[in-house]
Structures are given as C-alpha cells and as structure tokens.
Image (tube, rainbow, N blue to C red; front, side, top):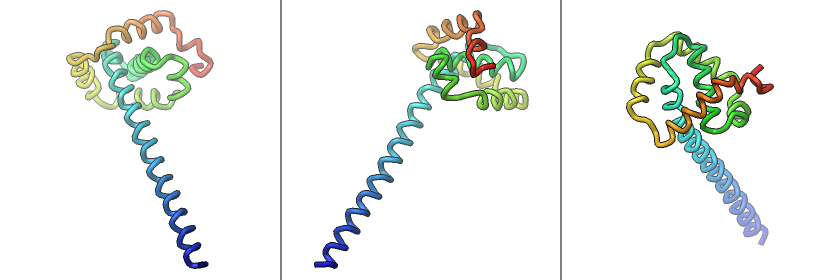
Length: 135
C-alpha cells in the first residue's frame, strides 16, 4: 500500500512539473509571437519617418513608431530607454539600417499609414518628452 501511494505521489508530482513546463513554454511562445507582431507593425512606421541622419534621430523615430502602434505610455513602460539607446548605437555603426528602411518602405503593413500619421502627430507635439519616463 505504501509503495502504491509513493508511486501515485511521484506520478502526480511529475504531471504537475510537466504541466508547469508546458505552460511556461506556451506563455513564452505566445509572448514572442505578440512581440513579433508588434515589431512587424512598428518597423514600417519607423521606415516611413526617415531617412535619418544619425542614430539618435533614428532611435527617436523608433520610439515614436512604438508609441503610435501600442500607445505612448505602454511603449515606455514596456520598453524603457535601453532599446532605443542600443538602436542609436547600432544605427551609427552600420549602414544596413538604411537598406532595411528602404526595403520596409516597399512593403507597408495595412495600418502603416494610420500609425505613421499618429507618430508624426506625436513627434510634432514632442509628446513623449512630456512623459516622466522620457526625461
């Protein structure tokens, strides 16, 4: 009886562990899919805001593109400053960004025009610099 109980506890523990692993993997996959979808919307907006003379200018446009697609507060809470600092550094050290930008302009997404208008409006009013996280 004791052995049967131990096997049952072991089996249940194993199933719980397996369920946890499967659930974590599912959540991670779903999150990565959603991030990928957002990036696919953001990059064409960023491209439409160019061309850019510097990494700082490109990063600013990228920040406003994210804000236009997912919302200004949400973008800054989710991303913070670090990705944009890294983008500026990467842009300044590679000419591939302009090639990417040109390619993105050839294949806009369905909401690119709408999001680009929003990003331009936010840029015009310098909206993101009024948010506490952007100071």
